[in-house]
Image (cartoon, rainbow, N blue to C red; front, top):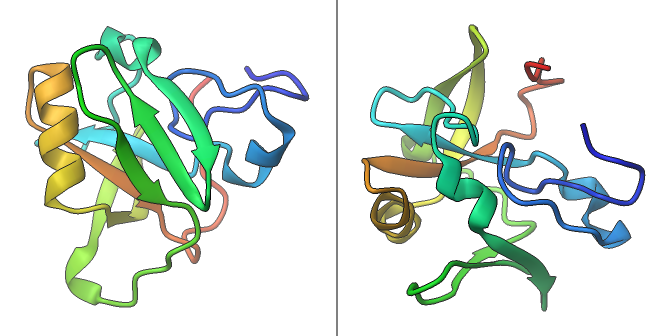
Length: 129
């Protein structure tokens, strides 16, 4: 659980202690090749990420990796990038962040992975405790 001033822009990943991150708390998640959410229990390396917000981007760093910048407020209107992710037994509508992000997370985690963003029309996500 996050405190009032700590947020997880990527669900299950490192905490960002920045009040500006509040609107982005758990906006993104990483899924495996079966579109199931990878939390820190299934992918411990997520906790090692360094996450910051800069110039309209979510900046993601990891040791030995180039920085990955993901636009904060881009809403994709291309239906081809929509997917359904499974989070704690529930299906959630998400938007795929693309091949570069997929390659980055797959390399970092050592398994096929995709970075996805909860679709703005998905409604409230029932995150497991």
